[in-house]
Image (cartoon, rainbow, N blue to C red; front, side, top):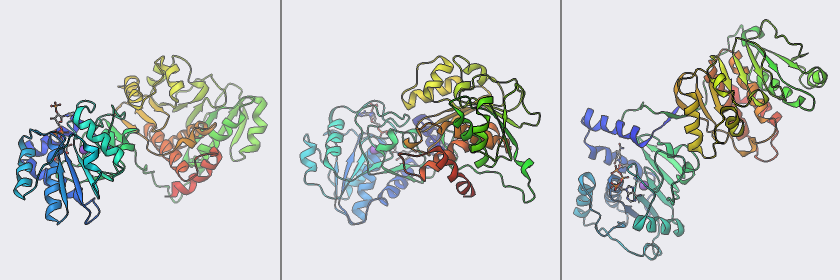
Length: 464
Ligand SMILES: NC(=O)C1=CN([C@@H]2O[C@H](COP(=O)(O)OP(=O)(O)OC[C@H]3O[C@@H](n4cnc5c(N)ncnc54)[C@H](OP(=O)(O)O)[C@@H]3O)[C@@H](O)[C@H]2O)[C@H](O)CC1
Ligand SMILES: [K+]
């Protein structure tokens, strides 16, 4: 799990090092500047933009270190009166002590027209409180129009460190030297795209900070015992598939089987039983007669037009038609339940406005999941995972728009059930399904992707 910190969470980590451990803040700044300098191609000229706060201080430190390396360096401030205080003022003195100048211009595009090499963006970082305006905005516009490669210090100036959305104009960086820990803007789209290639520069801070938002990494799956048999990997029961929608039942069954479930029983509407059975011979396919098999480990309901949820006390995965208007709260309060809506289904389930932006999706996911035992997977580009009586939100970074195709959600729901049947706790089962589903897509071209192709990728992908 990669923590994505808000500015406030990062300030806590910073205070702990400076006030708690007694690390001088200039030491942190020196580490930051040295780490960032190492990301610039050797020998090239460097043009450094230094803003009013400590991001500007980092930039001045980098300018000094780059000059000591023998590079050609110029330092620019958008303001004729930068008004540096504290560490940034100290860095300005050190730079001037090397004979360095600090230049400004009211026509940044003209100044940049003769620049060669790289630009270092040290205008604004963690202290950004509002959209860019005035001189800073003029410099960022000129920089984005210049076509010059940019190394952003900590974050591209103009981004809100704690948000996914870009509040106005922001630097489009080639690379970003992110100091200590990733912030929210380094993990979530669209802000993440403005960062270019991100390198986390280690500085002497706590390595395990508290973060309410975390990015999923490849899930670690429990090892399979050498003497395992099909009963060891659980029995998934899938209530899915009706006339004209038998394919959803097939794909759900494939999802559960391809992630390694031991047994899969599909209970379809009677008229589609034979066509489902013909397409997935590995599953037991029976007509729905109102009762569940006694030995089920997990029940998946919904794909292929099934909207009635049978009485059942065990682990339950609900998708598609089973996600009925206004019933979200009920399912979030049921222990052992996972719901996997896309934003439209989510809005209907919880009678909320459809969440369009990533920051809205996060806020609404938090709103419906806080303190609730049910697990929510709010699907979309960068699916949001919440609930299971845990506070933090997880974001799935894998996948691409090719997944937005019919049947992809049915496969995913089957994968959730398949992982849960093998003993993963529900939240971990949902995380594993979301991650591997997206990772399977990442191995395939975007357009024309079939959910069956994803299923075929899974065994090899799971082997690692
Ligand atoms: N976190 C760490 O452990 C370390 C951080 N380092 C670096 O420090 C910056 C954060 O420095 P800080 O001084 O807190 O903040 P900034 O440099 O981002 O800038 C704050 C000033 O900018 C003004 N501001 C805010 N928004 C705007 C805007 N849209 N336009 C113009 N000016 C803006 C703000 O003014 P106010 O009026 O809001 O008070 C501040 O004056 C971090 O990002 C790292 O680069 C360390 O060097 C390493 C350790
Ligand atoms: K910056």
